[in-house]
Length: 99
Image 1 (tube, rainbow, N blue to C red):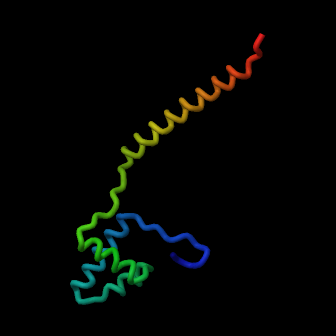
Image 2: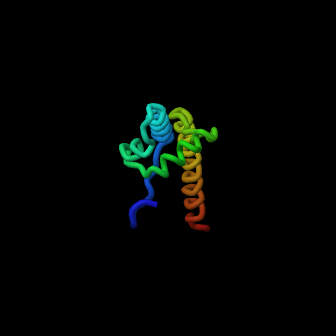
Image 3: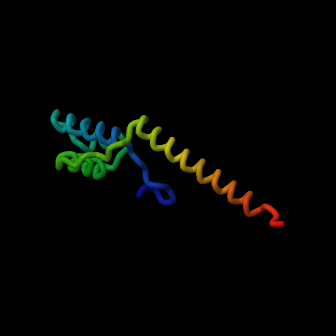
């Protein structure tokens, strides 16, 4: 989990893939995977888990492209605007004085 009182570190899929490739290259040259982990500031067991997952064919979570994210966020903004406008109209309707 990390140091006490700190949130666990999060790594991007790109970082993980690069770390795995670097570890594989180091091992292929006869070096140690733990030296790569130390150079990256990781625990050796964390890097080992990533390498094993990559060897088992597990894909890292796919990150959405900027275009996909923008489309998703624009739809969300439009929905929120409609909800806000509806709430304003409803509040105005119920706030009117009834003769």
